[in-house]
Length: 55
Image (cartoon, rainbow, N blue to C red; front, top):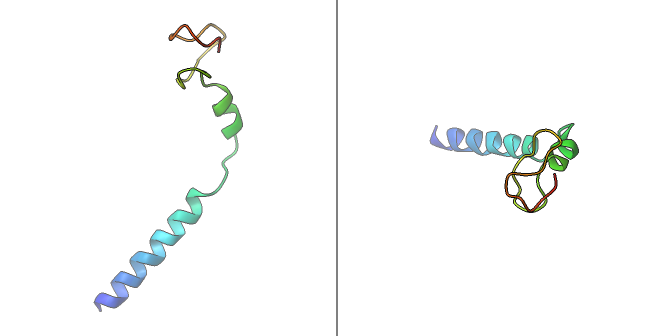
């Protein structure tokens, strides 16, 4: 009984890991919206709050 539970848990974790590896649409756009200097999201067209990146 315990062996079944452990096996089902491991299979479930494997399925979740496969979904985590998928590339979701819009990831490039989200990465482009980050500041190159500090990594914060930059909303709008103005400069970043850190003052180093231009957006």
